[in-house]
Length: 253
Image (cartoon, rainbow, N blue to C red):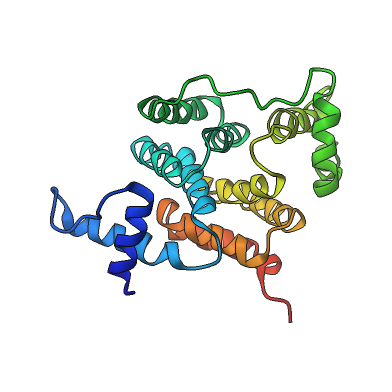
């Protein structure tokens, strides 16, 4: 198949319709967009449609491109991704993009859920209590990241020396990574994409590329995830992520 045929096939799979030919106010732009994303990028690399759509909604949530987020939440449902999986992808953005932007993404997601007859709220995925929140978060954080953050910020004054690393452990790992609905490998790979899409977080991109490799992703899968995110976040952010993680992602000699 050529890329026009591939675009038609992938677009139908995801959205149940036909890509633009000459319809609408900007058919030339839409043909460029659709044929590149759905006819080329979606067929490059090993990741399946499920993981690609989870990557897509991650980047759209980060960028706050909410109309497109609604469309791709619909695509997720069309290919059999569960509402719980979609929700977990959006929820775990909070430590990185903040609560207000995450709430915007949740509202867009829930609007699509409601339009598809999905009852809210969804079933709980919590596994922790107030008492287990810290040790459970640390049990996920420590094997992959050790005490790096606590050591790095030991210079902070007063209570902040412990509060800042504890916030990361309890909030970032305890509140979110302990939840069911997504696996550790998936969460780490999506975190790489999320940080790349943010821009200016290359130190964290590098750390989480290492984390993704430790939790089971291959170099090819990490590169594929970043390349798949590129049409939604732009080429410069792809190159920034690839450049900062080059030593981790290069093929071994």
